[in-house]
Each structure stands twice: as C-alpha cells, then as structure tokens.
Image (cartoon, rainbow, N blue to C red):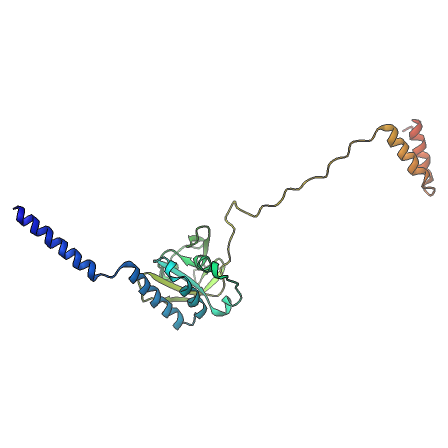
Amino acid sequence: MASFIAASLLIALLVSASNTAAAPSPSVVLNGDIVSTAQEMQQARYFTFVMLIKMVQEKIPHNTTFLMPNDRMLSTASIPENQVLEFLSRHSIPAPLMFDDLIRLPNGTVVPTAHSSQTITITNTGQQKLYFNNIELTGPDVCRIGDSFRCHGINGVIRPTVPRGKGLACPGHIAPPTAAPAPASVANQSLETSSLTSPSMGSVTKWGKTMARGEASF
C-alpha cells in the first residue's frame, strides 16, 4: 500500500513537471499578446500609439483595454519620456472590453483607469455612439487576437483630471489691516487743514471750521 502511494505521488510529480515544462510562462504569454496587439494597432495605422506601447511594454499589465488617439491627435500632445506609462495609464481600462461590452454600460457610468487617481466618464447616447470624457470612440474593436488586450480608437487625447476634493489650492484673501482711528484733535486738525488748502470748496471749509469748534447744529 505504501509503495502504491509513493508511486502515485511520483507519477503526479512527473506529470506536473511535464505540464510545467510544456506550458509557457505568464510573461511569455503576456509578451506574445502585447506583440500581436501592437501589430493590430499598426495595421490600423495607430503608429504613434504603438511606439508608446513599445517604450514601456514590460510594464503594461495584462487584461487591459486601450483607448487610442490617432497620430494626428497625438502630434498635438507633449509626452515626456518619463511620463509615457502615465499617459498610457490614463488611456487604459483595467479589463479587456469589446465594443459590445462597452455599449451595455449605462450613460454616465464612471470607470477606473490604470492610473490610480484618474477615472473616465462614459457617455452612451443610445445610438451606438460612446464618448469617454466627451471624446468620441471612432474605431471600435481594433484589437481582437489576444486574450489579454482590447483596443479602440478615439478622436482625442484624455487629459489629466483633478480628483474630487483635491482642487488646486488658492491662497486665501487677506484683508488689508484696518488703521487705528485717529484721535479727535488730530482728525479735526486734519479736516480743518485740508479745508483751508482748498479755496474752491468754501462751503466745506466753513463746515470744517464749525465742526472743529463744536458749533455744528443738525
């Protein structure tokens, strides 16, 4: 009985080792998927987006849907080399979604992106038209071959959004300091002096002198 159990365990280990040797590693599968996905993008003439993908393809997570601006739109965007992954993250949904999946989402649905602080609001017009942050989806289902990636063409660049509650800080309004009231004698002297230096304002001069003597009547 003991020998049977030992033999069974040995067979199981051999089968497991054989399967492990035959099955490609996840990284190989991922690399193969992203390569075939990039080829589909290139065939659809999204050359600039393909270039960005190739710059950081080792860091791209699997199970991703790309929203791809065309070359003309990307020519207007400034993307430093150290921000390529961030840019792609804003244009990525962390799930492989075909157009039929997206079109089922209700109008106003907010979906996450691969960027931790960015979301996308979907506008569904109900007429087979979708907008992502008001940018129209113009090329559905460009990528179909692999299991890990899907991609769709859009006619604009998704800009960074400021998360709620984290708006730009504005310096508070600082009111100018209030001057201390001048003593009565100084105020009267100032009023009388200013009135004397304004000959053209005779009535004001007379009123100022009367106030200084305390003889004003109302």
